[in-house]
Image 1 (tube, rainbow, N blue to C red):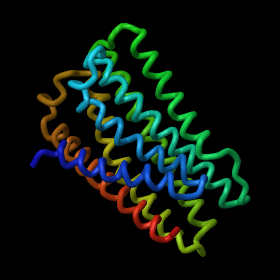
Image 2 (tube, rainbow, N blue to C red; image 1 turned 30 degrees about the horizontal axis):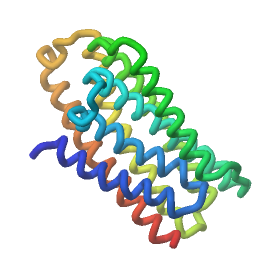
Image 3 (cartoon, rainbow, N blue to C red; image 1 turned 45 degrees about the vertical axis):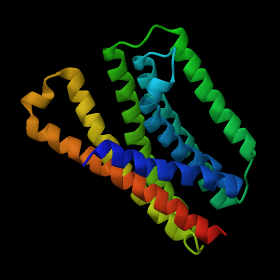
Length: 230
């Protein structure tokens, strides 16, 4: 079984469902759905290298990691907004502002990557560690935040959807936490896979399983919520 293909297919489904959900539902869901949808772009970008003339492979790889960081920041902002909304029923802004602001950050990141020298392998490792670190700690914060949202909306028909989101972030924590473990030790010693083969292989398996379950659960959660909200 090719893990990369399976993961890509699952995130393709999850990304399409997420973006569609952001268009078809209330503003309060927009940042959450867009954040999850951006994971798809980060996963697809390395596969698009043959179709992006003028950009080097290191630049594209760096951008894919930056997209991952943007995605967790956007969705975390969305859950923070929903927490405030669940307590006050107050919401500012509109959908267009979320889309424009997100695209603006992505465009600015692309310009930054393109006008600077192509990242070296060591630079790419650091960027990836930064991405995975953001994912690991913000996943833990989001789990607690979603728990608080659930307490506020537990009498609502969509309350079970937030339980599903908590499960999603557990899988994401497993995925990104395993990646971070590998990346940190790889920075310290590039021969970590040879020196500690069992730990390395176990971390790889946990990362792949977490990735698969995260993609599957994200798509399923948004489909479930879409049915409840319509």
